[in-house]
Image 1 (cartoon, protein in one colour):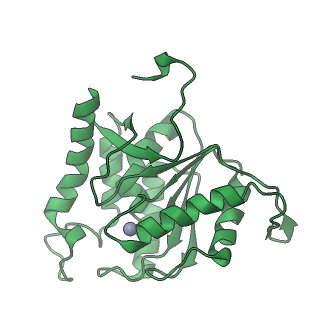
Image 2: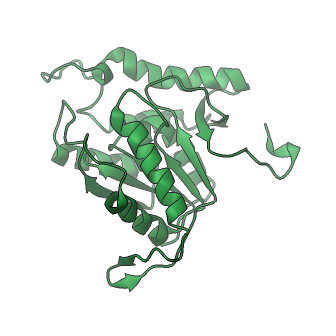
Length: 238
Ligand SMILES: [Zn+2]
């Protein structure tokens, strides 16, 4: 299946927190979007890998993505090497997206920066025809996405551009809250962590609101780029 946009996250919920408003909007505009989680988030303090699998599928349904797969890398310990790059290349060649969304370039959780560089490197390597990959016994064609954009996570990284997600903030928050074990729940008996605080949950909406304020809309999500931003015409900017 050919997709327009493929979003990668080191953990299930990274994509929802970072760019689900943008994904929901692009889907409403007719784009086909998929999500690939690198790990099952098995080291998360709350919940379990099995519960997070279910939460991730629920969030995928809320967003309306065409596919969601999990590569089963080791949470906390995956590395940027040939094995992991090839697994990601197989996904890029399978879905042939023009646009890749991936983790923040640097963050509090070490998997975010690692996942960011791993996916970015795989995007480049995926375009080299002499790297041979097979999926279900079939040799895959080389494919290099046109652009790689990094969403913003825990740290307040300054975005290079922002997407107006006005009208999609409720879908974003609903997809985040599909991860019932991960975020603020006053009735939970499990240990408290930085991301289970009410402050963190509030900050997701507030950041979108604040970024929206700065670009003159209600809500926005920010991204950083790897090369100069390019537009067809000045009218493309809002
Ligand atoms: Zn994460």
